[in-house]
Every structure is written in structure tokens, then in C-alpha cells.
Length: 554
Image 1 (cartoon, rainbow, N blue to C red):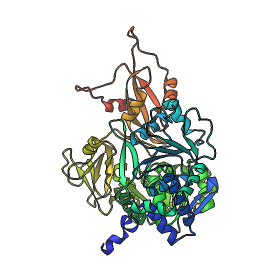
Image 2: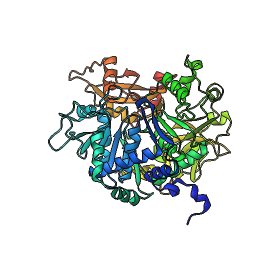
Image 3: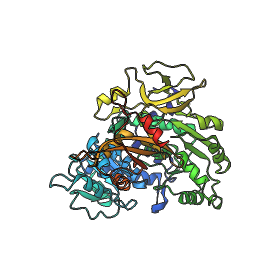
Image 4: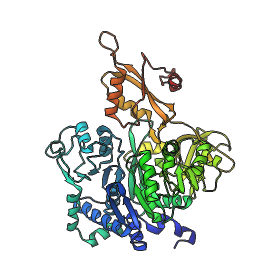
């Protein structure tokens, strides 16, 4: 038996994400769950449950077993949510893919996770994700849908009619044909799968990159997701009457867990938004009376600076949640004064901490919200430590350590990296540098890792460097973040060309190099500037002195 305080925990209320949906369908069957206005699709909570259960049956009929991994590579849309919860209902583990990935990047995550099925779109921003995979991994063989992706048995196209890829992909199925398989599975068989899943079972594997340069799969459970985002929902004050415009991408914890999952917990309406366009966002807020719109600071700055802002009625907005960068105090004030937000909240987290660790409270003053990332949420400990892990006095800068139920289960298939990230006492070493004040609020001041943030997206130099090294004329490369007025930071690359047999360096054209990068990596990773050097500056041990590189572009 649990005590009364425990009954509000999401993991105890619902146990798993599919059971959460079933509960909400019973509590408010006719309330709007998803309003995908761009695609003229609206689902009540009762209809969402029916759609999820149909998808769950289709996954079972397709041979998906408990703990199998299934990848989803698509923009924010109703089918993304239905597919994600449907595969979880079948007992599988969700593996989201970044919509900005190129084929090589997506293929690595699919291969690393061992995903046996991929659900994706073929017409997003004129991009066919199936075609991207084919280009990166070569033609199919009789028994291998995509060369190099040995576990991938089938690709399901979320678009109406898959086409033009038969020579690349062997097993390609339309979403409707996939769903038609549900008829082979009974209600009882699906419910048995749902009932067999426990809160401590994995709900998802979100891939993030580290200083090694190779993406790592962060494993989290249903309990972690439900408990953490029940806390999040309660702290920000999400209610069943809210209309939540989810601009943050579903493949990220901000759009997935603090987005549609938190919305379902609160019983509010989810408005997916696939591509950020200032005017379209303002129009959608005005027409649909959106009340909740979280996002990175650049989202709000773009709206405030738009010349047509006075033309739109944004008075329905009441709640903003932001983070991922230092926020000017004046921005918080303008969000309240000019955009009408009653509540503005900031927070801090990373994928390894279920994307949640600290949060400001709704009644904190603008300076606190702008200059700190809040204090630890209930059930989570945060400390500032020296290089040996010992806690530092308040006011001193050190590494941010996190311990609690939110800390990941580990990196999928990488126990060595897990041991490096989580110490023997359960503390997650975040690699971020921060200062904690007397009230327990932290300010992130630097990064122990080289990571930088481009418009809200984490960019990892080592990963970008590995991608650039595939260029036939590049011998060495170092990447740093450099300040940018619009994006916060952007990528700058320092390249040492290979030498010909004559000893002369390869001649690389700046624009040709940057154009090549655009074909190899997500656009937020693409260098905005390249500098060619005869050699990289290093210290006595051979480590690249990146502070010198930053000085060159500062």
C-alpha cells in the first residue's frame, strides 16, 4: 500500500504510457486529445485510445515482440503519437530519430539500437527518408531491406502511398496496409501485452551524442517518464482546458515527454506543429486560442521581433516553458508584457536525466527565471562538485551532478560509457558547469564537454568532426561553437587538408566544402564557417587547444 503522498506519482497512477491513455479515455472520452490542424485530423481521447489499440494490434501481427526496438522518423504529427504509444502497447521500445538527420546518421541509430521496424515519412520538406537511407547504405539484397541495417525487417511509410523506392527497400508498407493487420489480433491478446508491461520496463531509447563523437542510446522506463512529467505538468500548471501547441520536435524529450506525453497526463488538447514559421505559429495561436507554447528562447524572440505581431490576437497565451540557453531578463518581461504570458518557467535537464532535473517555480521573479535554471524537482538531488566528485560550497563553480529516479538506466549496449557517466553512488556526471546559490537554484555557466547549442539543438563537436573526416580531402578537423545573434551559437570548422604525394595540400573550395557538409549531416550541425590551417594548435600531449580556435572566430 502506498501513502497518500505517493498516489499523485505518475508511475503509481498509470504504471505505463498505454495504460495512461486507457485511463484518460475513460475519464474524458469526448475531450479533444489531438488536433492536427495542418492535416485536418482531430481525435478525441476515446478515438486516440482506439487508434493506439489498432496500431498495437498491427505491431503484434507484424511480429513485434516485447522489448523489440521500433524507430520513428517523422515530423510532429498525429500518427507519430499513435505509432509511439501503439508500439509501447505491444511491449516494444520507442527509438525516435531526429528529423534533421541524413541517411548515414539515421542508419547508425537504427543499427546501434537493433531496431527491427522503422516508421517514417517520405514527403517532409521535400525529403524522402526512405530514399535517404538507401543513398547512405546502398541497394537492398534479397534478404536485407537496407544494406548495413541487418536487423531492420520492415519500413512503414506514414504517407498515403509509398513509392519510388522498390529498388532500395525490400519490405516497404503503407500505414493503412500496416494497420489492416490489426484484424488478425484479438482485443484480449493486445490487453494481455499491455497488462504484462510493468513500470520498470523500458519505454524508450533516446539517442544523444557525447564527447566520443558516437551517438549513445539513453534508456528510460515507463516509471521515469510518467513520474518525471507528472511532476513537470503539476509544476507548470498544465490543465485539461489547455490547448498546447507542440513546436518542439517529438524526437526530443522536450517535444515528446514535456510535450504530448505531459498533455495526455493533464488531459489537454495537443496541437502538433511540424515546422516553425513565425507567421504560421502566430496565426495558429490566434485561430485556435492556444494557451500553452513552450520552446527555446529563439522562438519567443522571433515572435516579438516579427513586424506583423500587432496583427494577431495572442491573448489566449498563458504558459511558456523555456530553457536551453541563457535568457535575457528583458525577454522574460517582454513575454509577459507583449505576448501576454501569465507564467514563464525555465528549467534544466539532459537526456540522461529524463530531460528533467531542475525547474523554476511559476511565482519566481523574472531575474530568477532568466538567470537560473531553477532548483531540483521533488525526488531528485542536484549538487555542484569538484573534479573528484566532492560537493563544493554554494557560490563556487563546478560540475553539475544529478541523482534520483530520473537518471537513465544506462546507455544501450554500452556498459563502459554508462560507468563513466554514473558513479558508484548513483550520481550522473552531466559535464555541465554550474553555480548553486543559497536557495538551491543553479545557473549553468559553462560546459565541461565541448557541446554547444544551435537554436535549441545540442551540437557535439566530436560527432561533427567524425562526419567531416569522411571528406576525401580532409586530414584533420576541429569544431567549436561560436556566438551567433540569431541562433545563440553556430558551428565553425578548422580543417587541415590532406597532402598530395608532392607534399602540397589538397585545394578545398570553401563553398564546395560547406555544400558537401549539408549533404552529410543535419543542418544545425553544418559549419557556418570553415578555416583551413596547415596544422591544429595542440598542447604538449597533443590535445587540440580549442580555446585558441575560438579566439580566431570570436
